[in-house]
Length: 165
Image (cartoon, rainbow, N blue to C red):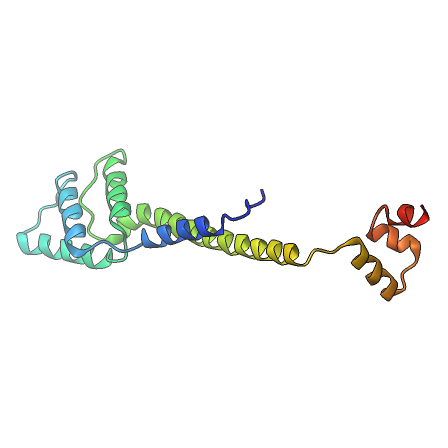
């Protein structure tokens, strides 16, 4: 579908919003989400130091994940049917995180490309509007190129009929 004229600015703003939504969560936000997930999953037998180390590792390995995606991934992890133990590695959560991250990155890139395309189309339309090709200018071009009447008729339909009249 064609991009509506003048939509480049709106598409650029939407792309920037998607890019900003890729900002990673803070350490405190990750800690709160992961700590909350501990109460929703089965905790393995571990001492306090081991539990703290696991949380620290998860926080460090998930430091690129936006808060809303981390929350959604933790919900998805907890809602998978069957018994769910608290994850020992970030890879267990990455199964849920990566598709959401990819989708958001891809959408931001697509919106940016659409904004570029819309801006190019608007610039071309402005260029054409600033220098319209009149029938007289077209005749001059055809004469300068020494085109035959049949070729000129294909370029500018109706010209041959007007010339004959």
